[in-house]
Image (cartoon, rainbow over all chains, first blue to last red; front, top):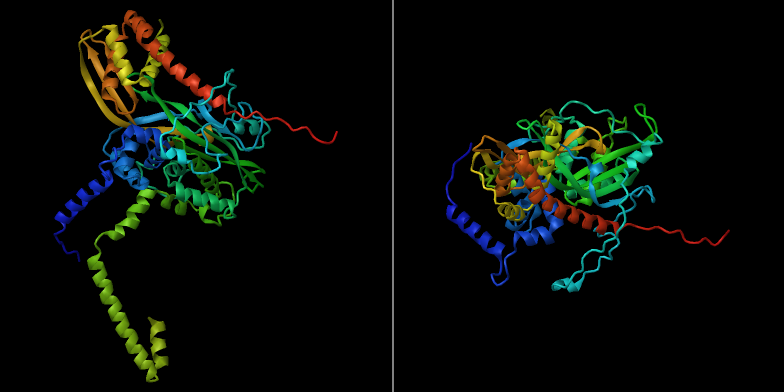
Length: 374
Length: 151
């Protein structure tokens, strides 16, 4: 039975007012501008875009500001906002092979065409705090190097030349499923799993990817290629009869290459896991690729023995908005449920005490027989 | 111009306008001194487009996530219709881009707009891309092999 109770409006109003006050903090400290957040917390903003599943830097920055830097709360705000807008259509798939590359590395080939381009990376930094950043030191611009840029070849294409790696296969004319439009039903297609992973929680996917390296669903991964950069977006507009260029988005792509000893379904070869996420989110793209590969176990005829290979486990729990919703709903009043549980526990304790008293009086056997029957 | 050439030129122009800044675009437009009367057929309005990638980079399509877009359609007094759709939430930029698209239905005006408005923006965008390429190129690893001790 649900009992309607009123009350708390004034407390809630005051709590929200207090939240606004604490969010702003010390008024003698200048307020953050969205431009500052976009420019200087760029990777946090990218995470909000990727897991909020909405490419819009300014909105993501606004969400970070409003959420006091709580990124999952910011992601929640972005997801809520997207439900207020109409869907105009589906873009043509982006061509990552034609990316304006800002970073591209391969751990498989040292001298691949296009070279190892480190870009703006934390790799090779010493992870020592820079006390100068306590102030606003002058920062030099990036150095430039002249010379015709060599086309950046894909690692998959190189291995494909020898037939040592699985190809992407023939293209299906069918539309990929869209998890924002249809309820999830397992098993999901790889396309729908990738959509889900691309907006999945970085921490959760990182932990699962890590577990595959430690031996759960062991898959011998190599970072075949990671690239970060901008790709063109086009959408077909029926009124015009052609695909309209909408501008560019920044994405991170990861091609994980995995040793594969072969199975009844496939010959020995390298298989691939794929990661593609909004913004500069290398760790996330790598974790996504590891999870994508692990989730292909059944398709490749591998035994499903570990959590990262279990679609229902991975996909149902990778969305941090759903996860936080269900965990945090425990804060909501459960007064009536709890009263019911309280009554039940009292009753069980009374029964337990009665049984203990009975057993002391030597009636153990009959009691156990009755319990087994229950 | 053939129909195909017209589409290529139109797409090309749209690609530049989509990546322009609103302030820069408004400035170049006002310098052009063209101010046709028009009415809005649609928008400017915000919406979403679902972006797609390909599995493995070249395989089947899958949905990555959405992006905000702004679109607008206008009709000039002479009946020319123009459309615009672009990433982000910038109604003024989308509306002006639709007007430019409509004005460019006239090939004479299109040539003038391409020369005085589209080309300067394109050069700016290209310079920014070149800088980025140059900065990335400076982070390219030049491997060298250490001389080995044995022959």
